[in-house]
Length: 251
Length: 251
DNA sequence: CGCCGCATTGATCTTATTCAATCTGAGTGG
DNA sequence: CCACTCAGATTGAATAAGATCAATGCGGCG
Image (tube, rainbow over all chains, first blue to last red):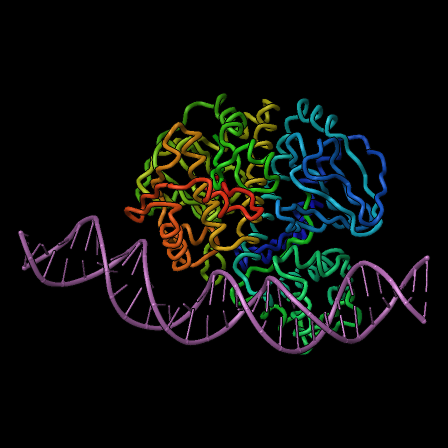
């Protein structure tokens, strides 16, 4: 699927809440998976935790599909602040939409396996097969929607709403993948979450604690979140809020 | 050019400040203009001030090029808050990146003339001419960069920085168009600016006043901004800030 | 054992929002 | 021509949310 899981999207949700940043990998798969159907299976590449797949400004040579592990897509501001754009999970594509050089950086959160697809080949194929070009167009258009969803969520919501929406998005992604929707294993640190949601780590931490005290979640270890009251979490996310879904997204 | 003028972009600036939301219509023109080269010139459409070209959720039937006037591209949140995504000026395209239905709304700020291009024809052409599909891909990829630029600016900056960056972006757009870079005629209201920058109109107004008192700008009428001290404005925008440029962008 | 990275918690402070009033200018109609 | 109205803009005072500064806790690893 195309990477959009805060960047995680749900079409039904979009109907209900037009304007919310959750989108559905399921229907996006149609676009992104088709991208590589016609291409030879690329080489495997393994990146260690904290290692970069590519950096902002690097010449774009490949598109990657995450096989295992997690990739954090982000951009830096000149003053050193960071905006996380998405977290790519297995099945998601990263590196799409680069025009010459990568507009984002991609760093592995943990040891990650990637399948590589040459951009040269991709472009050659696109010149021969017009449908592939349209697929590329559609895949990037999906990412555009995802980026705007994130913008909507992060810029107009309180800390609680952002974090609640983020957790819901993770839960939905789990659900879509056939995993336990109530047991979230966070593949990212508090810093990553803070940089995604435009908060400080202190605020993220405090908000986690508040949710725990309010009985919305359990928090055994900082990495393990159990959703105790999904409805209340929805409400917390939701004073008119569009469900956050931008966890992972190609870039 | 492709609509990106807070959504206004400058490649040189991007080099200097990787991560800033200013982009260059000039080099984007190569992508977007090519889109319609091969198509029959479409019908002219005139929309009155406040009238919508299309609304979020509408079935997408056309792509439009602004001939005269200004179009405000925005999305609503369920709770009624609004995020302005860009302001399209003459030469900019709007409506690109729609997959079936429009993900955004487009409203004329003033009486506006548009040139219409049928999506059906565009897609037909793209199926025949693979290069057109790639052009579409590139145009949307540009918009993706633009959307992320806006995200970076709006989510990590103070009110002064956002407004300063916004004014600089407008100034650069004027410069690119061969107009006076120091005399800005704002085609949008305070509400539009506030909704673009993620602020309230009061804060926008106060910040304008502060800039005026600090001698950075003149403000004869609320619509007419004269830049008195461009360097200071850059500084105000810039505590490491990437120059805001997202004024207009296709959608 | 002690260090180090990460997370949590507390106290204070800054910033922008909110609520409220006033101001301005462009119509409109008498 | 002038009073009236209304939308948009400005200004002020109080408030609240999150950032910042600072300290402490926790767990893994050398």
